Length: 180
Ligand SMILES: CC(C)(COP(=O)(O)OP(=O)(O)OC[C@H]1O[C@@H](n2cnc3c(N)ncnc32)[C@H](O)[C@@H]1OP(=O)(O)O)[C@@H](O)C(=O)NCCC(=O)NCCS
Image (cartoon, rainbow, N blue to C red; front, side, top):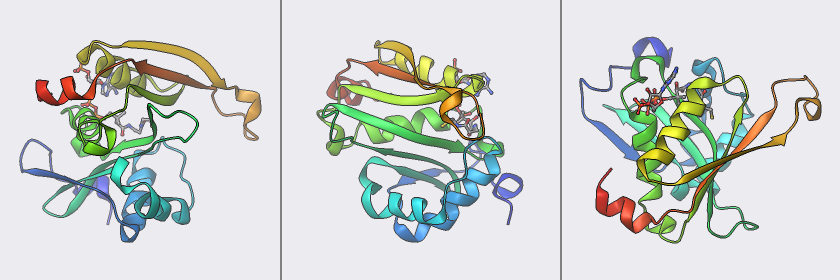
């Protein structure tokens, strides 16, 4: 099944958010493929999201059908930071605030209570992603610092450079209270 063609419009039906499980690896990889933009990593990598990073990741569903996901984790070297690895929303669900809602779903979980920074890397040619994270920073009144992390030459296939967007500091208890 093509998730992009068959995913219902997000505003039409109730949407649910849950932690992905290792059994969701195939759905995650299908969502990633469906974006046509994200790097498609191995099925094994997406199973690891469910196995090791479930509580800092999210799968959005409408009537049991996956419509979006965020994979993220807490790097040991950055104790106050949530690192967002990939965000994907099926074509039919875009432009309705779903990616933002998924990020807030993770940030307002107890496991993120002490998180003060959100880090992500964005390809220099991905305007949608830049707007998503800049708007998120604005919504929570946080700074958004940008610097190159992975240059184009570091990729064997010479893809676009990845810039590190570091959003913060912020207080997740305030975000929770604002009910964003
Ligand atoms: C990027 C992506 C996740 C955004 O999902 P979404 O659910 O449509 O995002 P939201 O509706 O929460 O939008 C957040 C903000 O970004 C803006 N935005 C979203 N898509 C945009 C686009 N294509 N161009 C410009 N701005 C865009 C929205 O207007 C919104 O700003 P606003 O609050 O001022 O209205 C989705 O387009 C996608 O899956 N793209 C392919 C994969 C990808 O690039 N992932 C990100 C890299 S990890």
